[in-house]
Image 1 (tube, helix red, strand yellow):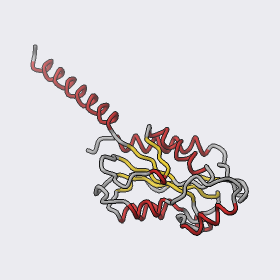
Image 2 (image 1 turned 90 degrees about the vertical axis):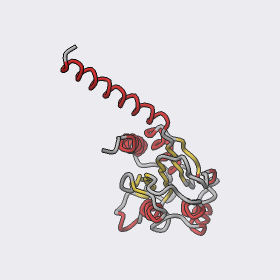
Image 3 (image 1 turned 180 degrees about the vertical axis):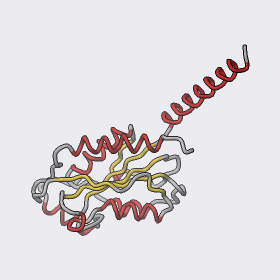
Image 4 (image 1 turned 120 degrees about the vertical axis):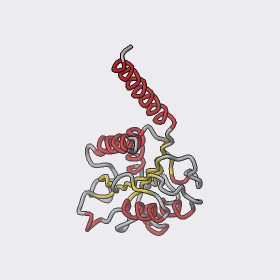
Length: 197
């Protein structure tokens, strides 16, 4: 075998080994999507994001207090009173609705109850809100991102908002938001799995 042929064989083996290592990493990566949802819209978005990420999706009520072993965390909740929900805004929302709420606690409280968080943990934040200017509605995702950064996490993507109907009685999602959420999850997963150079 000539030196050129030998070099080609080595390069092919090297590429093949890197490809296999990448697939193995993809299979073992633990991705967690934690959501808070009052009436189901945010849960639907979380499940679509989780589908795009091939991730475990958990209601904040059941979310772990220890993030050891998590490779990517995505957290989301509804926008209440221009930001993240509080006990008072959740009670007010529950009083307005005619169905039981899905989450009893909020992302704010869960983040506050976490033990030590692995420094530099890649994270992303999302929210649901009405489709109006963020200046008018606020965005819970910005507060979630801020709390995560304070804990030493690294934002893997900018905070994202998904839209619900503008009528307070209509808690359904705006058209095509589930598809957009799944695509966001897919893009987030691809970015998280991309090797750092």
